[in-house]
Amino acid sequence: MAERIPVLAANWKMHKTIQEMEAFFKVFLPLVEDVHHREVMIAPSFICLKDARRIVAGTVVRIAAQNMHSEEEGAFTGEISALMLRSIDIDQVILGHSERRHIFGEDDEFIAKKVKAAVQHGLSAILCIGETLEEREAGLTGKILSSQLDLGLNQLEATEYDNISIAYEPVWAIGTGQTASLDQIQEAHGLVRKFIEERVGEAVAQHIRILYGGSVKPGNVRQIMALEDVDGALVGGASLDPESFASIVKYEEN
Ligand code: 13P
Image (cartoon, rainbow, N blue to C red; front, side, top):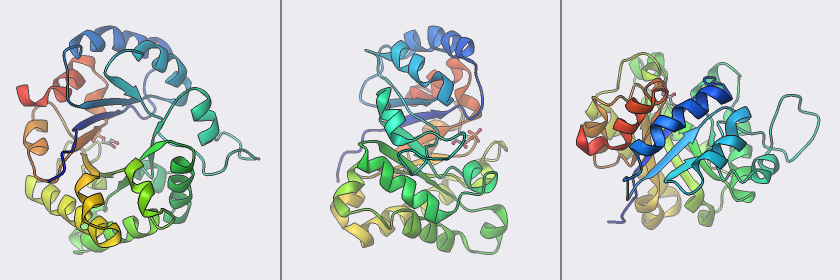
């Protein structure tokens, strides 16, 4: 089986000013100094990206954007492009987060264009997928995840999957304190890996990283990370506090 380096990623959403970000890193960086054999990623607001890059230079931490537009430039007030992210050396981006889908109305077609634009500009993308509570209760989870993957990845060549990770984030588990059960997580992740295998083959499927997101905390991350098809975690609320996120990064110690 391919070795997949674990990735612990923080999605700060619309939290933290520049000053708050600086205060976070002052405490966080010494706590993760001795961390090896994993990727640590933090996605602050656009405003913080450039300073965050400077602050973490030479450490284990990588900085990601939380979103971007699919076009390089144009009349899209308030948007940021892949070119702009690359101009400040950002090479990671989260796309299709459920808050982008549900609050800002992004559809699979738009997200697919973003995924393609990201990889074409040398960014690695984390594509987020996940079902709502109504969809789960109606027995539609597998169908929804397959459809989001199918549409979200449909512009990619097989060679471009090297720069893609998938984050499974059940909408009902985000920010609710209600983590999906270990069985539910493994089942969904297994389905994602199978989908990738069917689409582009076993080698890519064994290589691609699948992250879980939705109320991950220091107290549950170790069990979640131990699941066969979980290769990482995408953490919202519990990533805002430096001690809490450091403890998530060092999940085997919990
Ligand atoms: P919480 O960890 O706050 O549930 O958020 C998860 C999430 O949306 C990460 O992208």
